[in-house]
Length: 350
Image (cartoon, rainbow, N blue to C red; front, side, top):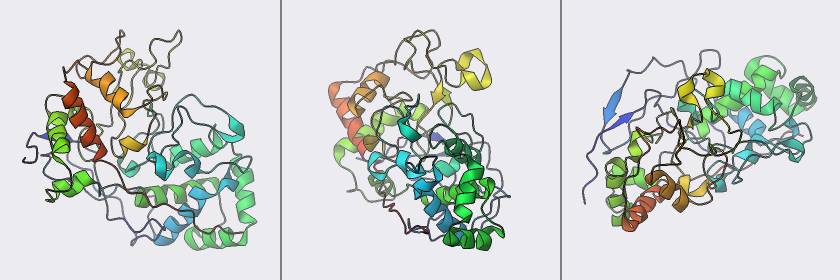
């Protein structure tokens, strides 16, 4: 069977860099990249990647990435020393925490699930509702909000009392730790290391005909054609980076209105950001509230037209009339998007 030739639009935010090892050793210093063209088209004959966009006020360096790796794993950044960034973004759970909704410091139960961080460097808006406009803003919100509950000023005092950290901050930033340079280091690590591009699907697209089985190849055809998945799960990121109401949670008396809380646009009621499908087989449970337990159930729900409500995205979410065999093939394709994650905790300064 040939590779699918149906065209899918690559999101304008798509970009990628060659990533150093997960141990945090990065490449040379990077500069801000030019704005991409409004749209780039490609077939499923191979991923198209561009350099990672890097903000001018947070240039990359191997030393900054290494520092960010340590901070990403350090539970001492949380209010009760119980949680790190990694606590919500685990390798074995597709860089999510595997829980229906996230758990914060002190066992606090939050209202939405932890989204995957794979290829997060190419996103321009963060959280399920897109309320943060940069990785740095998202990192600070998670650090000082419900996830880690930290007093940033108090935590940087603690970091500066640890010689190994203080030396690194001085070497990287020319100053002691501050709330802003802590999140700058974490964001630099996320831009460089949280990158999934070597799945079975990617190897197949690169020319290895044996990288995936025949069922997955049939599933790929369905994905871009009859099943209509590629309408929203588009490009190499497998997300259009937009917001859609698929009906999840809208049957509640006071539903989570998602993107509407940010934009106050009526059409955004109950709309949530399209998640990437990379590593999707490992990131159960699914959707913003973790209400769908298995990938099989998620495929069934989406292929049958979502959950009816006044704001359902009827243009994109439709009953596709898939047979059981077609759903099985589609699931095999989705499993071919599994990522290889080798993140391990580094030695932390004491």
